[in-house]
Image 1 (cartoon, rainbow, N blue to C red):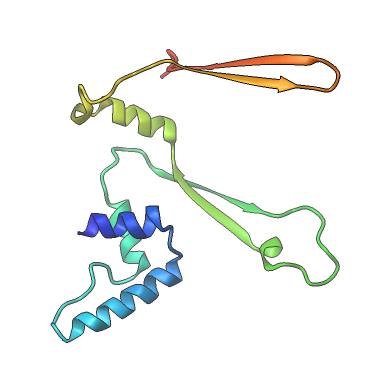
Image 2: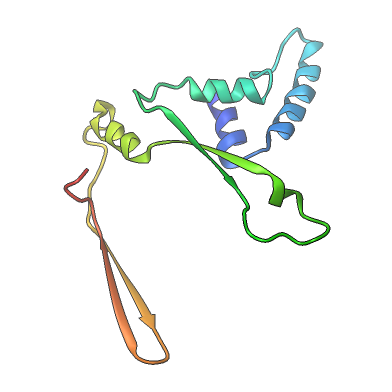
Length: 138
């Protein structure tokens, strides 16, 4: 049940932390009369549970971004002054781990993907071809 709830709140719904806390408070209050408690105490508890799932040695990394272009003289939107932190795990390393995982043996079918992108300009007609595949650098 923990996995299903985490998947719903974090992946499918992408619920904000404050909303997760609000939902868990309501749920916890309803369970008190039965001596129960919600699966997660807070959004932090949910995130820690997700983070505790074993992913080998792929470490979390982060970067921060901030709006740096010109701002209006008045009524500056809050997002223009805020700094946003993004956390991620290296996708290249994650794919390597998935491919090395014996649980996936005979469960994957590898195919070459070819994508054609047509680009028309008003001066001349240009054809661009982009070939994407599982390269040897993996």
